[in-house]
Image 1 (tube, rainbow, N blue to C red):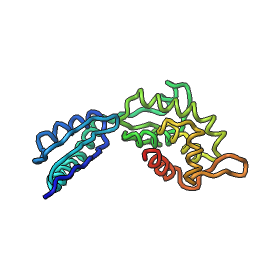
Image 2 (cartoon, rainbow, N blue to C red):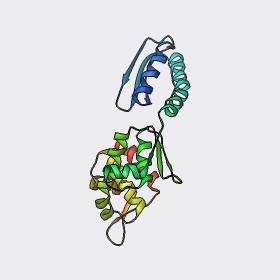
Image 3 (cartoon, rainbow, N blue to C red):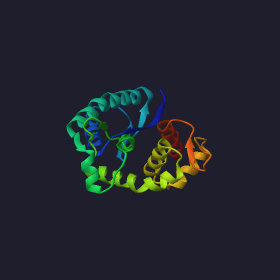
Image 4 (cartoon, rainbow, N blue to C red):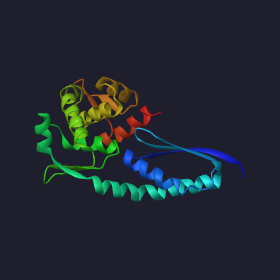
Length: 205
């Protein structure tokens, strides 16, 4: 049976990655070579061995990740009133947009509309940073976007990619997910979350 090399990427936060690393060390199948590297967004595994052994490794990784994430998520969830966040940054922001950005940064995030609160495992410092960034980008995004969903998309794309608002607009036009409206501003041709999927997939190529 020939030897093969495979790379696996497991999105996880630092504490989850460390726990996964410790668990995997004791459950490794007989693989010729394996390395595990912590990155900013997850755990990168590189394995060299027989195909059946590498397949067993990936099955074990997937088996461990789900329960581990659930344990970490439940242990770290906190509730923050929207009014408190707005008061701390002295600015207003759309909670729906903040939730979407947090989720795409691999945090758990929910908006309790009846309580007007955020439930998340993101650190308060990160919540404040993102909420303030959203608020600061909002005036310029309003000038560029023809409607609310397009404005949300442009701001989220800017924050998640670290591109400028104009850069997000330009690339989105090239991807045919954004077009000019009659008043010269920009409008999405698909749902804003779908547009984010397309945009983020392309910038990661």
